[in-house]
Amino acid sequence: MFLGIKYSFKNDGMDRVQSKKIVILSFFCHNGQRSLKRRMNMSQEADLTLHVRYQRDKWNERHQATPFSLSAEAHVELIDKLKISEHEIRQVYLPIASRFVELYHHLQQAPRTANIPLIIGVAGSVAGGKSTIAQIFHTLFEDSLGRDSVTIVSTDSFLYPMKIMTEKDILHRKGFPESYDMEGFVRLLYECKSGFSNFKVPIYSHDTYDILPDETLTFTRPKMVIVEGLNVLQVVPVQLDLLKRTSWIAADFLDISIYVDAEEENQIIWYLERVKRLWKEARTNPHSYYHQFTSLSEEELLNRATNVWNEINHVNLHNYILPSRERADVILHKNGDHSVTDIYVQRKLRI
Image (cartoon, rainbow, N blue to C red; front, side, top):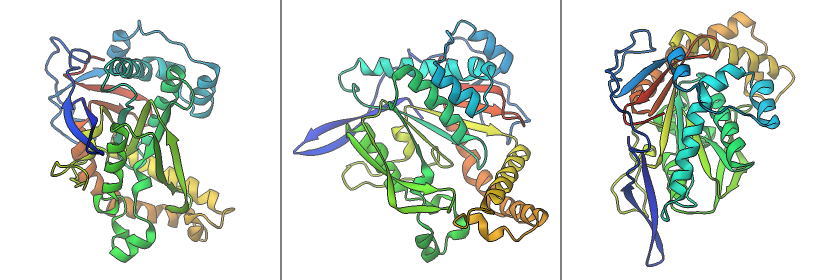
């Protein structure tokens, strides 16, 4: 995956996207980095030879000079609400966010990319912390670029409604590539990179586990768009009628990408904790998807959830999600307490 920008050109009244690489490797480029030794305790062996690994302490030493300041509003969001420590923000997230903001300003200086949002992808497994990571960067970006300048879009918004999945007999494959309206997702990314101003996105409810039929997320002229989901980096070719190119994948429209990584044993624990929390909340919410399970004992619930992980999430992780990890520009490897222990950066980047 390259740091590419897609431009919109007017041609006979039709917007057309033409693939055009911007030479910004000098902006994000490594010099003289040593070869990466593959970590055997990552969630699965993979070819990460294109990445340079930084342990947390080495990463911190490298970025001690990064200025650190948070507005009162950002402090409340990150430290009080999300419970992210100031050390974690300073040592891990701020250096990355600062470079992404620099990249945004760099691209705004070019006529063809001015007023075009920077698109950042955040991928990873079920319950791996993608949404939290996206929210952290959202807060840091808006602290620098201004309120309402950054939008988060989840690929959950492009899951087919339960009714359609039932008709297609793919309800048991929810979260797998075929359960998403990938054409709709890729079209949104195309429109973001083509200078469109107004956007509407379906809303997925984690309460009902379904698309809300009469509600949409609307946003206008964002400076950055963060797209997060299981399938952000997966190779699922899509054909768009208004484009001459044969097929596109979501990553064609990403400027930068992050993969949130963790050992599977930790992901299982986080998944079971989430299920247990939603199950408890459902006792007082008859509209919740989990309300149907409130008659189960906690042991019965967790047994069912474990089976779901083994039969669905584990398969999805190893067949579709993990293979996309090596395509990420940055990999954040998390410990059992959600703290980041290692940062992997593609050699072409300088962060």
